[in-house]
Picture 1 (cartoon, rainbow, N blue to C red):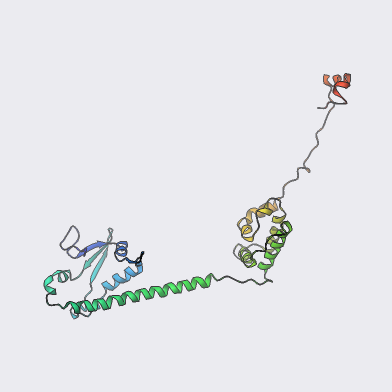
Picture 2 (tube, rainbow, N blue to C red):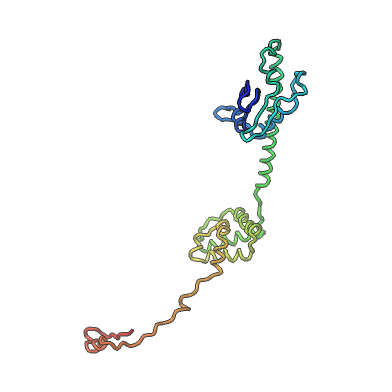
Length: 264
């Protein structure tokens, strides 16, 4: 319908410029309130079918293609072959509309159904693959991940005896990721769990392996860098007896100053 019926600018009779997004919008349809649109793959399949030999029942065009396409910077130039034949009304005077409509109505829905079925089967295979890969692991109680999860929970109970027991399978999976994906040492993980629950600040902030994994590096640095004791570096001040006049006043008037000695 959009093809030029006469030459216009760079387009010849029977040609038009179109893009894939335009074809997708033109082929969209409504299902209730929802708009269904074909995919790019479906549009490419349709274009490929139109570029191949005509598979219709009309013997006159059994070896001819329906369109030719050329890519340009503006989009895709589509040339409708036999445009003059299609647009000449005299060619339709002796045609039986019923015979012309029947092959079209029978052929096109079959092609559309085949394409849809292929896409549905492809979507099912993709979903089955995703379901298979996302299936959760089950950790035995004697596995390293599960043992560390139980150990961390016991350390938390020391600070919060009424803490509800978490999902140990989820905790075990997070610990497994630390070991396998982050390449963390199991012994180091256990030491960090113990230290976290003994630190006055971190004991209330890190209450799960997921949180521990997120802050692992910063917590490890903090654990390995203990604070220096102020008492160890404390140097007592040196006092000297004051010889100012205030001291003499102090000795001369004890009832006013009391038993006080001045130092500097």
